[in-house]
Image (cartoon, helix red, strand yellow):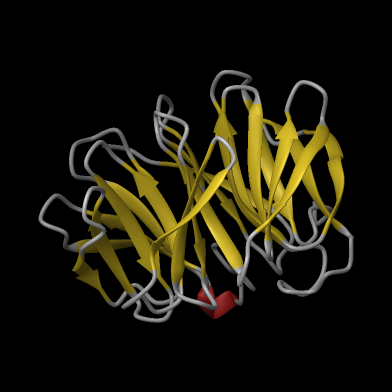
Length: 250
């Protein structure tokens, strides 16, 4: 309904059966205080358009317990979900375009800075640079037991990073402006997006299949959310100002 202005990311919260949508509401790196987080029902109805407001350029989101972590240009914002209140705005030194977030089972928050090419880690008040070299506009993150999957818009590829050493390798190429990534629940199968407007299914051998292309219509596909139980992909269309849901079938 074009009310979610410059919607960048969708996060499906299975425990609360809601969708959080980060809405930049302006230029992606502009500090205008107009950004907000919307809350939707899984059927697409808006529960609260500006559930939390007063942000600048909110992008990636992740949940740990009752806390929602959001990247906001050069800060990590911590929101109390039950109270819908911002608890902290944590400055990230040297950051200029913080992007996606993924949270490990131990509560470690991983997040990317597309401008600097860095990946950060945050846990229990401690901010740490994790990967600082060799990445071109890193964006989407997905955390597994021993590795981190990363999409990049600059190098147009999918990388796998060893969680212990930080060393990485490229496994899939030509994905355009690499953005969101989600595990489908089926071994070796991942859904990834190109921000310009294309959705891919990555297979166990790291080959890819294009599922949907909307770039010709100038409709973006940014940082997706995923309901693994129902195999539904939630796509924020960025400048198109909507969230669109698609059913996968395996």
